[in-house]
Image (tube, rainbow, N blue to C red; front, side, top):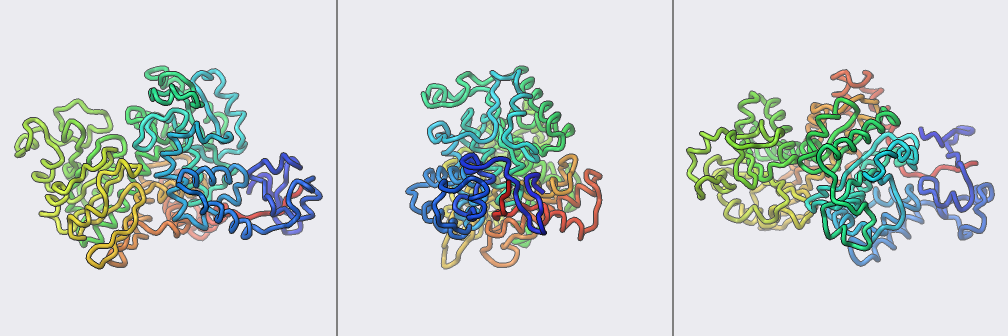
Length: 565
């Protein structure tokens, strides 16, 4: 229960630490026109609000009308952020009521534009900005947190924002958006959630030259200085909030995996781009394979983009193949990682996280290739004949008609996931892929796409959005107080999510559930994750009945409560 919440004669109420105009400026306490006449008198609000007292449903109607009048998606994003900064209860009530419509506005793809224009649309502070220039003050900065009892942190350094690259301090839009989804989709109390941007400079010259840019105007810090700064930050977090769940978000490829490996055993942490992306993709793949009437053991995988996300998905998929009966060696033989240098093989100098996913050079040497010394995606199609094609490159329009139709020659139901965000970076359009395969392809994308009508049939396009995984993960972890986040907990989340796929129940159904049902899905995932944590000794054990009650009680719901001094 929130520290500010108490009970009086059986009624739960919120204890306000201050009154008057200051109370109206506290988004976690403000009810705007829904303060009762008695509350207004007791809290020195008389005259500060219009005389008519409304309920939250009346407020909701007016807010939705105002939102609907906005002319473009960025304006809608700005409106919602403004509402969140004024009245968080009303903001979350509105978003949950219209989640399918508003998800693309508060997160991808609109959040990418919001990050690019963060300085121009900046209105008021949220979370913590920790600059490298203040390296000696990190402990003091954490003490300044607007949230006292922090349970979950989403942190970024702004270097790899979606597929848009280095946005510097503008990357703060991502932690803000992610934490909004933690609450909207997973029921995490917003009074326990803290967004942080680590401003280590930016190599984006356009940002540094922009007179409106609000970040530290310096080239990005790198090397030992960068890792020292990150370590000071992590150690300060561990000291202040030892039981916090910390989520790394949108760190560049060269930093993402090393940071995860270094700190995953020091505190409860994970990298959503590596592990969350992997879990939701694996879930959609499991559903696609089942929908196609195929077997996981018979799949071969081409991954276009061998960065941290592509390799993270592949490593999680390796574990899934093993669960379905393959040996780890057999599973790894099924993967073809295509990067700018071609298919990664064991003769190349590769990054540590790529080493387990290379192909033998001798095997590729026997292929018939279009370019001597280079094995591109078409070569993989013709020689390896993958049944699954994943795009995580950030390079648009790479899944061409020739590539897709070559794949369709040898597999009845090709599984094709163009997953790069935002929409402008997507490897292929679902409408094209379905047309080129005569409606047979099974598709999931990173950004939202409308249903596709083809030959009298409606094909629902699943959005392989991490919001299906991380809110439920966070709910399960925090509700049972898990000490660490394991790979098997992500695997449990993936399997739990796959059970909800509409494609398993009707033709043309999506490979992931409707966002309108996301809170129920998050509850299922939370239960699966918590059980896995208990099985691994990472949380105290409890019965199934106790666990379900614990998780349901932990879920925050946007509703006004009486406020007292």
